[in-house]
Length: 148
Image (tube, rainbow, N blue to C red; front, side, top):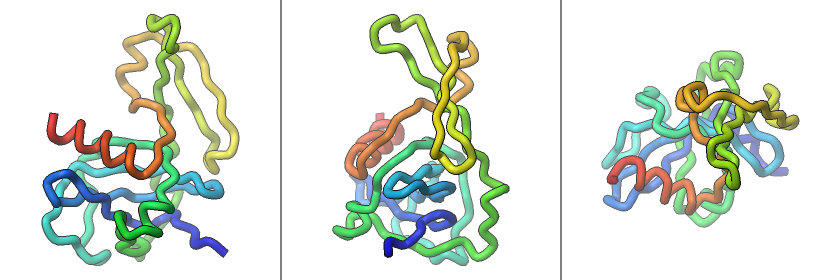
């Protein structure tokens, strides 16, 4: 049986040989929803030392391959993990054809059911971008956000 990652901290490598961390707040099969934090580490913290910092990305990802091949490292589960303290956020989507149309992308609390509704561009700016990524794509997005 696969390990449930919810409540676990994962270290994700960056292009400059530092790491950022992610807290997996939900999992549905092989898809996880994580909050990725801006603080960079040259040495990984222990689970007891870890503290959340500014959120730089919230994303759905299939990161098991990154863990399986050793690119990503599992630091452990938060000792006081309470899923109710970490909300499933509303994310934004932009229509790929009519780029003036934006959507609020909403999952239920278990990230099993998905709905969306049209929102204004101003409201869209208040949400993180919606996306489902593989582990390498997450690394690329984080590198772009931190080094561009």
